[in-house]
Length: 630
Image 1 (cartoon, rainbow, N blue to C red):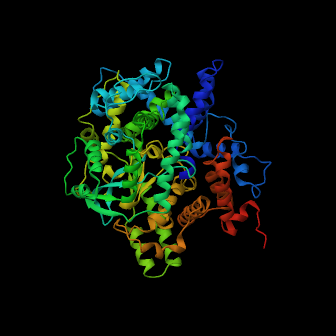
Image 2: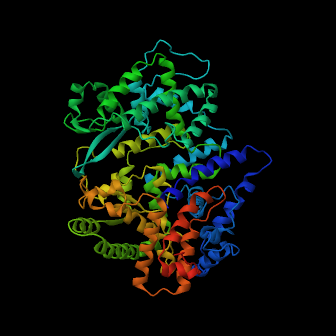
Image 3: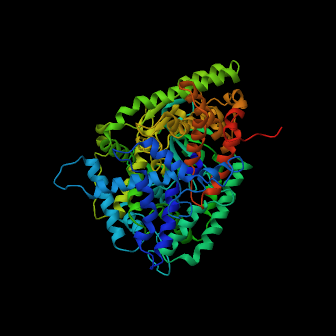
């Protein structure tokens, strides 16, 4: 679920932009399928939500397809939006419905009514974004560089034939650090504040190699396309191949140190970097974290010192200083342009959600106060899943592995993002945004996120602190699904998950356990099946020896993880109440219905859903009249 459902909104944006290029197609025509989909997910006070969901499940089924041959096609072959390029899947509709609700709140605000500062700043950002969109043309990304020139004394290089300040020496370390300060990361370097490996309450600095999103290219395909979009807007598309060639050189450097010559990780202090021929890294961190004052005794985790030294030599030897600056600028600008194409309301709302994630969670709960009464039920659902998994672990493991696993499971907690209003007010107390300055607003917010991530360096931080929730990550900020914070032994549930058809106060347990319950179960299972999470103990500290304890539980294929999780959710439900033969069918169909998608994504979900269907034990398998051959 996690890999398939997240990040569909970015794809929707690019599709929308392509359609907009055809002047014969109106915005209303493009958005009509999505508007219909959103309307079908709205719940009125007179609706029977269980009948509503049953009807949607039944209407999506393709009765000509035998379930045993292709269960996903049977469950989703008649999904109303199967051939609609603007509607990707069920989560996409939930996401768009939330965007519509937020847009109405923002646009229908009474200016005479006082509001909290954090809401005023979120509204100012949204209005500045809408003002840019109203101009009818994409924002020139170079405006970001001009803002940084004025506010950070950035010496940047123009694109195209323009020549300016050619005599100025440009320091790539300082330029990269400024870009990191305003959000660029996992590019050339990965810099982050992370929990100490042996003390999960202490935050330290970490410098790592970048992790490429695509095995054949330094940039992932989506980022590569976004960079082409950026190049078109700065009139430098003809130089695209030069940047790709340089990508490949950097990729070879990263790959070599990842697969061939990775040095041992080191824990050093900031002051010691100078004696390791890494004074340039000190300069980078000072600029990137300004105005934070770095203590010389702060610990710094160096993943691969040899990579850093080779990287410094490689970039210092680039003869074309102007090209190197343009290369760094391009990748910074393309990340900023990630969701800012020339689309409609969804982009501005999506961008606001990404940059104000806690505010959006608070706002949803503020306008749906009834969901507070559901928190106890959700904690009970989580406890039931854990209790049933404990029974499985008792059947599967022996001591000492069993004792370690039970301690870890007992310490696993569910944290619902129920943000205290004063905490948000404090977080944004020093923020001021201009409703007419989108460029400045966006950069200020990028910097705000970086500052927040590093705000407790050297301090002891309590479990569940907002700094640990990774809400700045796009896939988390824009998704209603639960997600994990492994070193905190936490599973975090956004309040935006409490939307039909994933959840509703009147929804039967059968539907809840096969949707939101399944999503929770996936996260719980991952703490024992994922090789990286297996090495984290009950206190959240790293212990590499623990992997050996959980070898029998390791699952790496998505459909096997999903199958184990759905089986756990079903068994948990069956302990609570009896499940009839017809209800088992409905349980499976509702699970598959959440993976109904258009033709663009149908193939991605095929292996997962059909693999899960095949994994079910013979008793439940038999409800559709399927029999495995002996």
